[in-house]
Length: 437
Image (cartoon, rainbow, N blue to C red; front, side, top):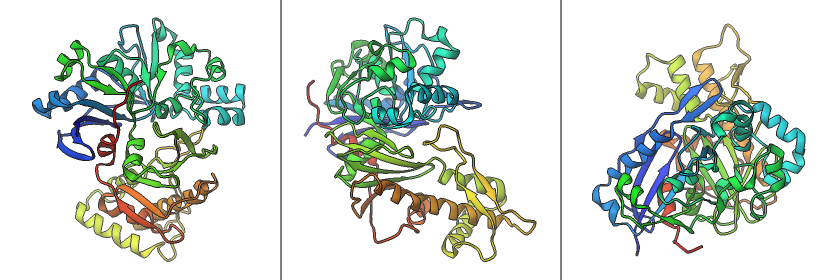
């Protein structure tokens, strides 16, 4: 069986591993890179990210030169414009960026909400659908786009740097806001015209398991790899995890972490304005996704703000006690769980406590956060059921440190079976079998 160099690029770090099928033979230490936060903008320096990729690969030693192919999974969107040589002309603008609210309103105002949903599968959520970022640059930083020869997401940038290819898979194409997501029939001239860009600037779309290109001599030297190594087009990190979960129609895959992501696999996507709808990237399937943008991170915030003197073990004990107890008797506080906004809203919602009194304690606040998050987790099920795909009762779960997965499923109605999938993104990459264009 062939071996694969897997690259898992998240919002803050890169993990490199060597796989044989879904078995991880070796994994390098996680390499972190920084995101620059200025107001609503969130950017990553392209050279810093490339350096992190090189360092992660170097952590595998000489073994990385011996792999048969390379596969990558990456955060999305991570938008960037490139010149004719593949050099970045802009920072990498991540999915956390929310500067393009006015552009999002304008995009939807020109084309109409229902029409945009019918073409793209999603509303033009600021930063989360990267057409809004492109429109923002056209309006506010047009000079940065002079000389642009290719515009796309992070995998397209990595391919341009490593193989010279101009490629992207359907999962990433879906979140550009310029792709015929619901039938995967290529770039939409109507959506491109709506923001005033040429489809010629966009990459070729191929399924994730297609060989996008082979490693150039310069890239082989820079990344410590073998010249000519085939590199697959790649896909979104959540898609790789769904592949490991089985990717059956009706399968639920729940990533429980700082952000809580619940994805449903379907072969008949039905757009909903409160869901993210995108291609899986392979197999002619789609994912419909509901996200709690700040789940564990809301709990970490509560500890830092309300329990700073409490040792972590004591805080975890108190947290578990409140989780078992449910809403505290007499507690009037309600928590709005939008500390990191909402990925399915043009206008960004904010977290809030409601019902505070002079009798409110910090335990009341933490209890309200717990109840708000668990209720929000359960509220997603009717929303996913409304798409018409029958939900399987088998739920694949990734993450869940401190057993937060148990808490997040506490109020789900009905009977469910939960199974843990470990290293879901990395191991999912091992299921991609290289094929030619």
